[in-house]
Every structure is written in structure tokens, then in C-alpha cells.
Length: 239
Image (cartoon, rainbow, N blue to C red; front, top):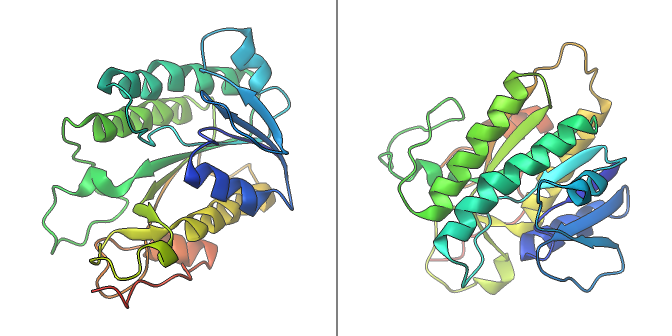
């Protein structure tokens, strides 16, 4: 497949690109520059022909809409997850992109009691922080595109992205997820979408992913079962 990765200058965006580059043709984009040997197009995802060109001939989009950037103003993140996010989805729908995989965050469920068995069927409860509110807006917009049959949408809500080797000895976070496991999950989702008969397929899917352990804050049972995938990096040594 030819895949567009947005937010490609982030650590997660780069990890996803590493995981996908051997089997797919990639186009990377971000609002900031990126030194890479892959195809890269700088874009602010405006409502113009440059965004149309960005999605031209693309089969699938991995969209890192919510990822916060240090130093950005609050309104910049709300704009990225509303207006610019809408621009991308509109261009994708008009270009007949097969699938958009939106990477969101499990922080949308932090307000639930830790003893509750929260699943993908539960309603998000965002607070007013722009990183959560932005993610919620992005999910809502994507869902509307799916329900209108304009796009096939997969929402992948992730735990707190880290690299296991770099958090060794730090206090345990029950929402940790290694960036390499996140990247592998993205690859598995895209592979399943590519090989599934599209005729009876639902246009909207939601999956949750974080590290798997007895101390995990949220369950990843659905994604592990449907994709036969299990995160490989453990944080059990962290106390």
C-alpha cells in the first residue's frame, strides 16, 4: 500500500515509519521539517490544493492528530484537531482513500474509576485540557465521516507512549505502551484492512492498546484477539 503518515516528525511517527517502510510505500508529512530518506511533504493541512495533492494516490492514512507538541499554544492544538483534521478527512474522502487510522489517546477515560473495566464501548469523558479535548473532537469528526460512508475509519486509542529501555527504573505508569508495540499494531491493522473483504466490513472500528500486564490501567483484549497481536515490551521491572 501507499501510506501517508501525518505527525511524522514525532517519535511515534518515526517509529511507525520504521515499522512500515519495508513493506509499504510511504509519504510523510508534518508542519515542521524532517530529515529523512523517505518522501516528505511539509503541510499545515490547509483547505487547499496542497492538501489534495498530499493525499493523491494514497491508499491509507495514519493520522497522528492528537500528539501534543511542547511549546504550542492551546488554540493551536484545538485547530489541528478540528479545522486541519477536517481538511485532511475531506481531501481523503474526495480522493477515495481506502482507510484512515486515527491515533487517539486512552487519557479520554482517565476520569473513570480505576476499578472499572473500561472497554471500547464506553463513552469518552474528556476534560478541558486541549490535548484531551482535541483528541475528542478529532474522534467525533472522524466518526461522522465514517457514518456518512465517506471513509473507513479506525480509531486506535493508545496508552502513554515511551521506549521501554528509556524508562527503566522510573516509577511504573499503568498506561505505558512501548512505541515499537504501537508501530506494530498500526502495521497489523493496516494489513488486516488490506486483506479483508470490504463489502460486509463496518466503516467504523475502535480499538484500545497499552502494555499488557496485571497492573495495566485498561484492557487491550479486543485488539489482541482480533489481530492476534500482543505487545512484546514489558514494564514489570519498573516499581
